[in-house]
Length: 183
Image (tube, rainbow, N blue to C red; front, side):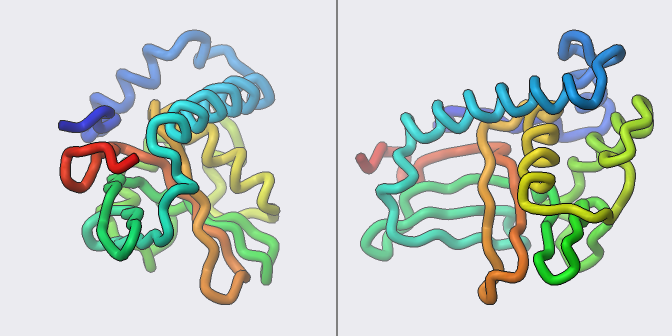
């Protein structure tokens, strides 16, 4: 049984959910960012308390399945369905939104367009510009905003093997691999 459910899986439903969040038609970008960080910090605290993420030895993500998995003693324990937010490159000092990254599978970037659509509606430049000068803070800010707008249940940052890039993702569904809490 899943403890958390998917956020909207169709554009119309997603737009309705964003519309139901209070004050989004009048919020400034700074206010949105503050609300988003507060939301994500709360979700991360709930996630950590429930799933004790530091307990696991290994993690793996698969773009084809859209799963981020955590294992202990080489046994898969936790499965998270994720949506990619984007990446921050330390070589070019830029942020690239997942919705504009053709190297990512459609499965993990199909819903993030709702953030761009909201950015168009509110004319928030960082939400509608595919690639822009950025650092890790910007990557977390975009992740927090995406998590808030999409009502995600947490987020994760994955480093590339050479450390030159961080990929950011938000959680759509979280479940135990065998239905039993391993802690």
